[in-house]
Amino acid sequence: MRRFLLAAAAASAAAVLGTGLVSVSAGAQPARQATTTETFQAMSTSATAAALTLVVRGHFTAGGTLVPVTATRSTATLPDGTFRVVQQVATSSQGFNTRTCLVTEAEQGTWTLSDGTGSYAGIAGAGPFSLTILGVTSRNAKGKCNHVQAPATFELLVTATVTLTSG
Image (cartoon, rainbow, N blue to C red; front, side, top):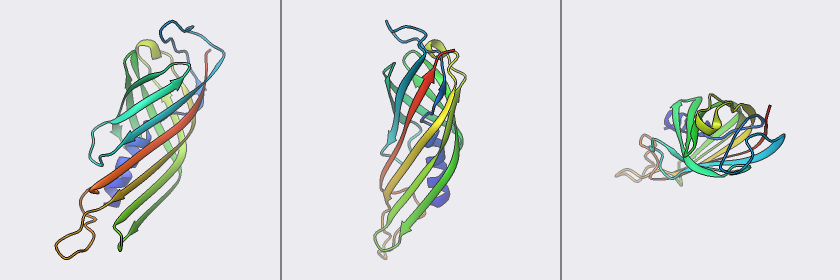
């Protein structure tokens, strides 16, 4: 279970981005701007989902998906293009309550984004992220927590505030 949650957390955490350099054009907004702040939020309510829902707001606003490629790399797909997100975890904690079947996990670290396509060509940056997972496992026939399968109830949330600078 811990291995599954760590992989899910690491992959989904890669959904969110940090502070750094970027050249982004979005709709009628200018293609180059000295400094902008973006807020990224990715979430899922399924421990086995292939993609996370991603919402970006700030200089550009878009909704899309974040698809984990490896435990440390994901691809963000928005209507006007894609970009790569790489995570480096600095701190991590996990917990499992055998009485209540509650699974908890938290991570903080740095995200790096690159390799943009479409409107995100040239995107680059790095900055802080945080990830939180809460889940409740099912119980087996003997009433014990079933920690082998994915949690029956699951919430994963990744957030980051990114300062983008055009070059």
